[in-house]
Amino acid sequence: MNTLSKFDSILLGDNAFYGVDHLSHERARQRANHVQSIENAVNVIKCSYEIGIDGMVVATRPKLKEIIENLKQTSNIVDNLDFYPVMPYAQGLQLQLSEKGISNMIKEILKSGSIGDEIKIIAKGGIGFLKKDMLSLFKVFIDTEMLKLNFIKPKVIFLHPVFVDLALSLDMKSILETFKNHLRDNYKIEAGLCTKNFPWLVRKLEEWNLDFASIMTSFNPVGFLMNPSKEECEKTLNTYKGHVLAMNVFSGGFSNLNEVIDYLSNNSKICNVVVGASSIEHAKETITKLKQL
Amino acid sequence: MNVGVVGLGKMGMLHTGILNTINDVNVVAVTEQQTMLIKYIKNSLSNIKVFQEMSDMIDSENLDLVYITTPISSHKELILECIKKDINFFVEKPLTRNLQEAREVYPFIKDSNLINAVGYNLRFVDTFLKTKELLDNKILGDISDVKASMYVANIFSKPSGWRFKKETSGGGALLELGCHLIDLLLWYFGNIKEVKGKIESVYSEVEDFANAQIKFVNNISGEIDTSWSKEGYRIPEVNIEIIGDRGRIKVNQDLIEMNLKEPISEYDGTEIKIYKQSLEKGVHFDVGGPEYTKEDVNITNSIKKIEKPFVTVVDAIKTQSVIQAIYDSADKNSIVRVEYPE
Image (cartoon, rainbow over all chains, first blue to last red; front, side, top):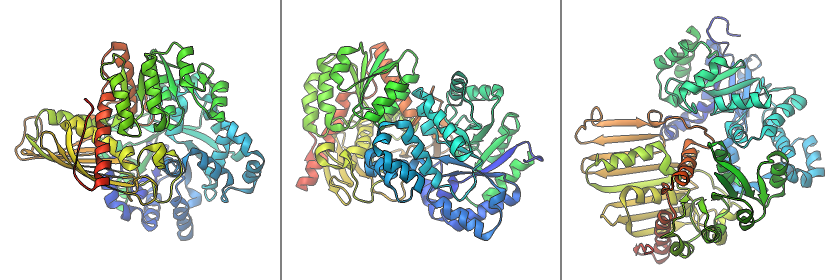
């Protein structure tokens, strides 16, 4: 708990370590080699921890394990950080879909040597069954994603907005319910949802009588990725009782630090933020300012 | 408005979801072959009926619009069936596997009153829309050159699936990605008259790389380059550079950069950057990107107001004509004139 700041929690996001840049994909490619180095990522995390982050939002990317293992070898801060993974790593999924097609991808998930014994047993006895049952397949999918996280202790695991918003639009309550229950029953971990449609999600959860440990969604000075509008999202935030984690507070790199600080200062309901930092200097500047709010 | 969706793959799911969120629009039926999905829809989405064939779905349901989101090899037959049954339709891009199939559709659609649309949704991306406005306002004066690329880092080993077999897909990166570039360029600058193309397959049976020198009817010169095997491109990225006698514009999905020889009244200075964040207004629901939502809203509004959608089959046939000319040119290793259906 971050008692000295306006925020209950300030989290470091890992997108910037992989060169993700919402302002310019061209710029991201140009600096990818620097920011993608494990050493840089580890140094940024250490520096952010020193300043006072409470945890990290991470994607289930292959490189995550390398970063965390390096961090464990060179410091003892991993146990003090709360981890908030987002699954699945959508770009990786898209790549697999492009190269293999959906059927081959399912086959590979089920037969994968990387899958734990328990899942392999389920898969061995039930490939035919799983292919006929989407929710069972979804559970196996969650299990395979969990294997990518067996080196950290997640506090809340978020479902990626691609899944959440699609489920929302298709009225697939069972997908969100299965995600929550499967994590709770099998891993004793709470579930969260990422969305680009915060007011819509809140309305639906109320209608479905479902609640989640947290909702991660965009809040920023220009309304970037805030649908249907900045005003509607802020209105919903003012009345919503649950936990909200604000992302994209820099409007994907478009807003400067002063604008963001102004925005956050004037929105008392934003109590949890995730910010990215591609370098130590960047981390120092951003997180120090946020801590002073 | 009642909509039926043919094929619940990635794009079918996406459009079904978006359509479901639009006021007065209901997805009432889908066609799907996969047992797993059929079972899930029957159990969990009881308001949607599932059919095996599109013709049965159209005959059984009172549909205002059909979305065709099946693999490309089925597009021609499904389009012709929609036309025969007098039903408005949207079809995902590219239109057909080849120009021959597109030409078979053309006589039935050119004078049709049916609302018909094709999924070239980059036209709905804010930066590309704004660029169209800037070009129409003659910000760059007379255009002389254009260079356009679309890359993604997807394919680096032998891939499997219908997309990578010539017989089922009709082509590779040029047809899958390059079609977007060609659609944008035809929209910006009018018809292309001749091309000199080359293609290369490294990982798949179809082309992984394609390049073409192009000449427009209005004598603008240009180049198109595309690949789905380009390192560093995490997500599909389009870059277009346009040169005119008053300056140049570089545009991609994120940003418009203008370098002008003289300042103009709307902007300060001669070096201007317009980021997507300053153009973007929220959409009522975003799944997969605002351009998909805008596309589906445009099509359903076209039906409500009985007006032409943004991108029609006739537009897509022009794109297909250019693609075919590039394939033919690569095959003959010579300049080929683009033949548009009349």
